[in-house]
Amino acid sequence: MIYISWFEIAYSILDVVVSPIVFSHNSIFLVFASAKDKFLSKFTFSILNSVYCGFFGSSMGMFAIHFMNRYFIATGSFSQTFKGNRIFLWMFIPPIYGIIWGSSLHFLCGPNEKLNREIEYPLLTAFDLKTEDIVYVGPYIYQKNLNGAYEIDQNSVIAIAIMWCLLGSSFFAIIYFGTRCHIHISKFSKTTSSQGVSLQSQLFFALVTQTMIPVVLMQIPCAILFTCTFLNTNLGQLSGISTITIAIFPAIDPLPTMLIVKNYRVAISGFFRNYKVVKVERRAGI
Image (tube, rainbow, N blue to C red):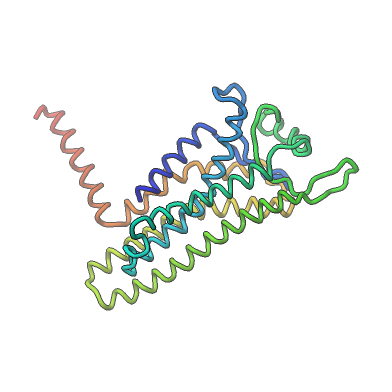
C-alpha cells in the first residue's frame, strides 16, 4: 500500500508538470503536451511526456501485483512468496511494464514529418497549437504516402501490439487471482471465525472496487482509443475525456479501502469527530 501510495503521488506530480492531453484523429492516437513558454526545454518535455506514458504502463503492472498480493495474503503464503529480497523482484514488475510501455511509444511512435503534416490542421483547429509548439508520442497506423495511397506503419502496429499484450496480461492476472482469492475466502469462511472472514471479505471487496476504478477510468478508455485507431475512426475532442479520467484516478483510487474496510472507516470518522470537538472547544475558549 505504501509502494502504491508513493507511485500515485509521483504520477500526480508528473501529471501536473507535463499536463498531457490525449487526442485521437482517424488512425492517429497522440499523447502530447504543450512545450510553448515552459520553464523546461522542449527535449526535456519530450522525455517527461514519454515517462508519463511509462507511468501509465506501470499502473497496468501495479493492478496485477495488487491482486496477486491479496491472494497470497488470503492463502497465507505471503511470507514465503515475498520473503527477504524476493519482495524487490515483485516491486520491479510495474517499472518493467512502464519501461516497455514508454520505450515502445518513444522509440517506435515518436514525431515524424508524415505525422506532423497529418495533425497540423486538427491541432490548430481544436487546441490552437502548432506542431512546433508541442511534444508528442503516438501511433499513426494508416499513413498516407506522396501518391495519396495508404500504407500500414509497422512500428505503430508493433507498439500497439506490445501495449495490448501488457494490457491483456494485467487483465488476466486480475481475473485469475481475483477469482482464486474469492474461492479461497469462500472456503476459508467455513473453517475460521466470523471476524477473520469479515476482514478478508472487506479487503477483497475493497480491492475489487479499487481495481474497477482504474479499469473504468484508465484501461477501458485506453482500449477504446486503441480500437478506434485501428478502425480509423475519428473521436476528435471526445478523446479528451480520457485525459480527465486519467488525471482524477490517483485521487479516487484510495477511497475504496478507506470507506469499505471497517478499521479504516472507524479511524477516519474518529479523526473528524475529534477535529470537530477540538474546533468547538477552541471557539468556546476551553
